[in-house]
Image 1 (tube, rainbow over the protein chains, first blue to last red):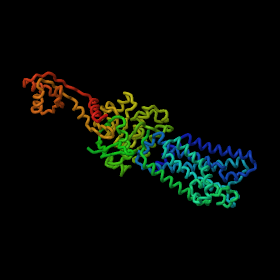
Image 2 (tube, rainbow over the protein chains, first blue to last red; image 1 turned 135 degrees about the vertical axis):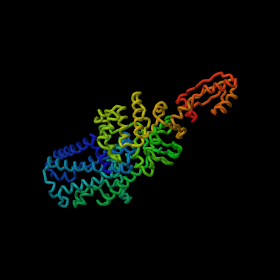
Image 3 (spheres, rainbow over the protein chains, first blue to last red; image 1 turned 120 degrees about the vertical axis):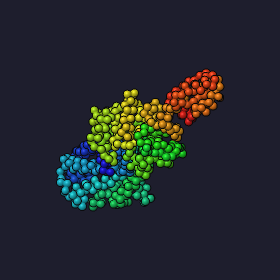
Image 4 (spheres, rainbow over the protein chains, first blue to last red; image 1 turned 30 degrees about the vertical axis):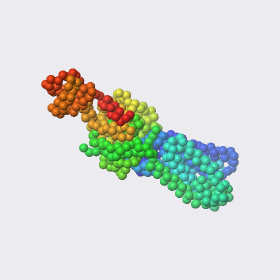
Length: 266
Length: 302
């Protein structure tokens, strides 16, 4: 199994686009922070750092692209034929891809944390990441880590969904497109769902409602005035648990499909 | 002889359409078996099922005694394959691509073994270049290296001769014979008899999802010498040949036809003359394998 993960990691690492995307993440974080400095020069570094410079959506976009390529590219290129005729179960091959995507997402999160910390201290009023914040007096680094960890839960969900789409349609460009579509479209679907929420309270358990989990962090950390004005009807832990459950269910479905379907190209 | 590959009553349905119908055949150790049939007959489907890319609906596929359904890992570990065109990760070098597959082998080979394999397929000069710079021929040779990297007992090749020039064909033929001498069995598909008549020991002919003929190449070649005899008393000659020379005779409107294993034209002529029968014509017909193949495929109603 470690062999498979090593192989997947090498496939990802040998691709230039992987590093270009990560470079872009760092670059954009700095650029965005600079724009904030122009707007409000006396902002404290930690005010931006705690929410990772609001760059998590871009990180999620990169992960969706990587997840889509990881599965669909094997079909588009035709390399899947050489991959599935090795002494490994298809379940293992898919699991290695999933683990590799999580590894990459973790690397991306670390990159984002570091560049957000560096950029906000460079362009805004420098502060120690250990100094207390409005979030119940928690150190800024702790709040940032909570945001990063919460975002990883979201990534899990997006990645599972993207892998599912890739396993269904098996076309790289279409899988990337659809994955990105879900990433940005989910907020639109979600806002429509919110309208119906009052009438059908059970709708609060729909997966798109869980996309609002970031909004529940301030309340979780005892700083409710920072909360977004969205009534999801669910607490942080309910959403976190749901995201995990939904991700697992989608992954299991993907695994079933990946095992079941014949590989007959062209 | 031991069976390297055994298919028993293998069928494949797509929807309600039966695209492979109860296929059974074996590949024995050290054999090169040609899977021959027109395009769309089901050769690639058979091959995809043998390497586990497609699942069969009924029957069993056994590789080196391991069932592909029950013991996939052990079964597939003995198989190396190229299905359709060899495809690689273009952004990696040939070497890095091969390393991917070497790591996935149950018995991981050494770097020295990898280098030896690269030399065997004549890729030493290009192996550290990115695969996107490779020509079709180089990709094919990299594909062969990929299929041999785990020292399989069975090599499965799907239409490997497509796009090869005559020199490439000869190299390919030599390589397969060399592999057979090393104890590797080969299953190779083609839609052209000329591609595999010089390679295969055995032929399996697939038509419309069914295996219609299985024959050893030597038998096929032997059955080719036919003697056409015309006399002024065909009926008498027919019975004489049957009774005195124990030959199989076909009586046709334009004369008699006898399949010859050994050349006994002289004995036949003497027999006819002894009985005072007028010998009008005697001709040895040497039909090509192509004729036989065509006759067979026409029988199948194509």
